[in-house]
Length: 447
Ligand SMILES: Nc1nc2c(c(=O)[nH]1)N[C@H]1C(S)=C(S)[C@@H](COP(=O)(O)O)O[C@H]1N2
Ligand SMILES: [Mo]
Image (cartoon, rainbow, N blue to C red; front, side, top):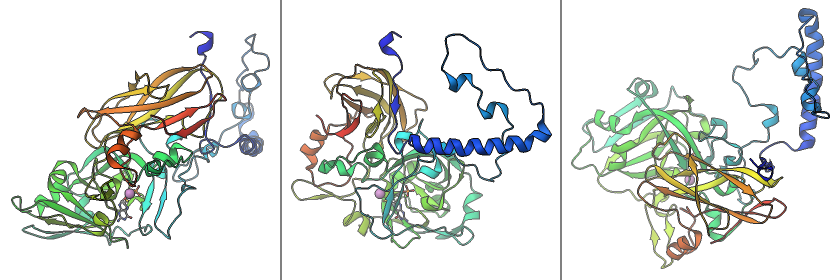
């Protein structure tokens, strides 16, 4: 690396790390704790051999490495006393948040995943976004039931024990609310990637294929065209899903990321409908009905329809099309130095795998192909990385994903030309982040 290519530094958005004053407070509290712990442990562990500080010349003034901190000299804490581990106290600002730009209607609420602070593709369970139409419940699994009925030979009611003894599968998929990035239709530049794209999460789910349950009930293969899924909360959440999708990869899942679902994500049972918008992933799943036509329920006629420029509302536009976003640097962050920066982000497609991601640093005039990380799973997030040497001048960063159907993620003006600007849902446009001369990154629309 030449001198100008020294790794640049990024100050995280307020949602990323604690601010310096808070860090100082946390650190002094921790020092007191360690000092006390050290004194208390002194009696038992007297004579602990402290490591020697490095004596290398040329590092004068580097006190953070030359002066041994308490934690290199004292006795650390024993195993975490809590039965269930928690993140470092220095990470306490990494939180799901409600958007300052959205009004909460009673229990119909949204919390967003802090994409700017996450690595790889897996969303930790405590940071999975939430979307409740009528609040969440912690449902007793011993009393939860799933009914399968309709065009089946033998309607059945399953307990959780019944379901969990069946052969299960585990698969990684993204879930994205159809309204994700919806504010951009109206060019409301919400400040951070948490609020533009944070109704997006990705987990490993474990459950049984819904197809296996339909087989178990002897569904009418000739007549069955659709399946209705219904949730056990007060929202009356019911969604129609076509039988091809169901037979392809829809799961009835009880686990995410190796543990049982969290209550707010549908514990003890939810539908996993890979590639479909979040609303089809019915939580607290209690009923599945097999039918020969779509039900046209309130959540597929009143809501989750796209108002087109000619006044016609498009229905059942359920697939989450190919999309990507740069998560760092992103809105609210600040580039502290010119020089080398690793630009990173996420790409996904409800139709399959990500084939390529291109990144532009000049608002879409020139594009370079980013490096795609493993794994390469269908209907799953894909992490991309690309190196960039910032010259200290203004820049506009964009990412453009291409999926294995050949579909190219559109610019916002291309999308508006077809869809108008009265939509709420299904905005998969290229996101632009503007880097100002001072290094501040903000949300802009550029094409
Ligand atoms: N029963 C029920 N299922 C539901 C919802 C709900 O309110 N009730 N919200 C839906 C919507 S709109 C979305 S985007 C996803 C959100 O899932 P999450 O809260 O696990 O992120 O759940 C869907 N399933
Ligand atoms: Mo949603």
